[in-house]
Picture: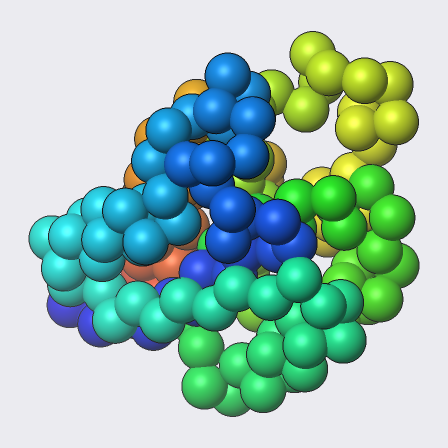
Length: 155
């Protein structure tokens, strides 16, 4: 079985999880979410890297640095979901299979949060399940990567 490398990227303000609006985002800290992701990744035999930044350019740089080094991308672009053509272009440009995740259900929130620049280029989007959105996203991403490898082997 192939061991995949996955990069989990957390966008702006996610470093404030556990403090910031817990009624919307839950009470877990980003460190706790990363720990849960790491445990799930270990069970899936996935090498997991995590990265968080409040700066759009740093996120773009990290996505570009993943080219040729990472098999899958799990991203919570946070507020940049609704505003960042730069993140969208970076993800599209590297061609790494990407799953977009959100703690809250962005489609049940303010109207400006309903549109995602990332969703049209992602293999899927999971939102509204709190920290479980990350776990579900990781599982979906790994399943996608496994299916991709299986198809390549058959060809």
